[in-house]
Image 1 (cartoon, rainbow, N blue to C red):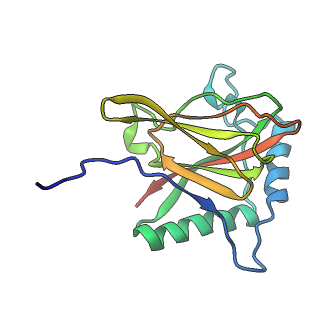
Image 2 (tube, one colour):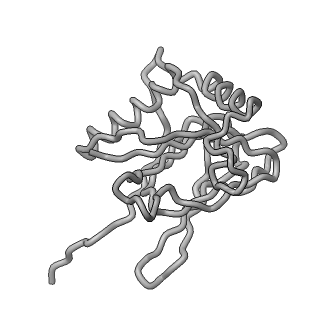
Length: 183
């Protein structure tokens, strides 16, 4: 008997473990996201849009280093290159959760991302999870709950719906989302 895998849902996660002296200044990334939040620099200004609570993340050296780390390690391990399509930050207040959504445009699959990456910029320990929805053949509507941790990432296909569980801490949780295509 032979087996052929037609499709798979691949998920990657881990810590962004930079070399000594090149630590990522997550404080700068956090402050950039909070500044966009305070100035209401939204990705989408339509209150009915899912992206209404997504905030613009400006370029910074620490942000670039984090992206370089993920891109370079993924290229070495999987032989493909990740190219950033979009990115945004979220600020979750205590008891606040996110919308359930995916990052694919059904009417524009060609220009949709391949992967979504979630990065914990400033997340109180044990206070929030990334909930990823998937189907396992006829076993539909399964979920995987992964804790969102500081300086850790979770990357999965952009076709999968996901959400952030309610923030159970007494402080803000700052999360970065990057959408990639691969070449």
